[in-house]
Every structure is written in structure tokens, then in C-alpha cells.
Image (cartoon, rainbow, N blue to C red; front, side, top):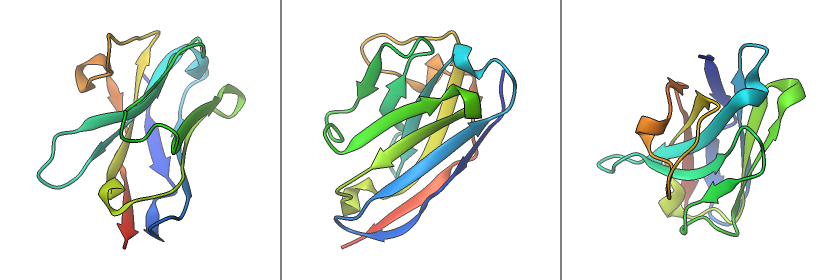
Amino acid sequence: QVQLVESGGGLVQAGGSLRISCAASGRTFSTYTVAWFRQAPGNERECVAGIMWSGGRTFYADSVKGRFSISRDNAKNTVYLQINSLKPDDTAVYYCAANFMGGWGTVPIPANFASWGQGTQVTVSS
């Protein structure tokens, strides 16, 4: 499995934008399915976006559709999450997760992923 490091979190005002990154070790990152999860205090960890290793299938939670965009640059071993029109409810720790040639059912769940980053805090002020 790969090691993942998130970066790019911070404090932003509502309505603003942020791009967070997930950098992976290893030379076979293109064969990993990657997802972004978030967890706010007192809440369960939820998947907000995912991208299959083949690149052909993506997932977005209903709460972020039209505002979040996941992309990957396999040459840089990096997956990005572009977050636009931020809301206070988006405040959470955002985690990157990956699994070798993995997939998901209807919704990506934590059990689908073997590798996790340490998380990056995103805080949205109203």
C-alpha cells in the first residue's frame, strides 16, 4: 500500500475556495482508487468524493455535487480536491484514502480503503 500526505487545508470564509492535495508515495499510484473523506466532531466519517484507479468513474456526495471536484495527476502521484462555494457545514478534517485497484459499491465507505493520510483541517467561517 501507499503512504498518503494531505496538504492545503486552512481557514477560509464562506463562499471561498480551497484546493487540498493528497500526495502518495510509490510508483504505481495510477493503480490506486482514491477517495476523500471528511469527519467533523461528533459525526461519522463520510465520503465526499472518489475517483477510480482507471479514472473513468467518480463519486460525489449529494451535499457537495456541483461544488467539489476530484482530479488526479498520476505523473505527480497526487490527487486533488477542489472545493468551491464553501459553507460552514464543510468544516471538518479531510482525509485522503487509497486502495490498490479498488472500487466501491453505491457509496465509498472507509472499509473500501486500506491506506489513509493523517488528515488536513478545513475550517469555514460564516
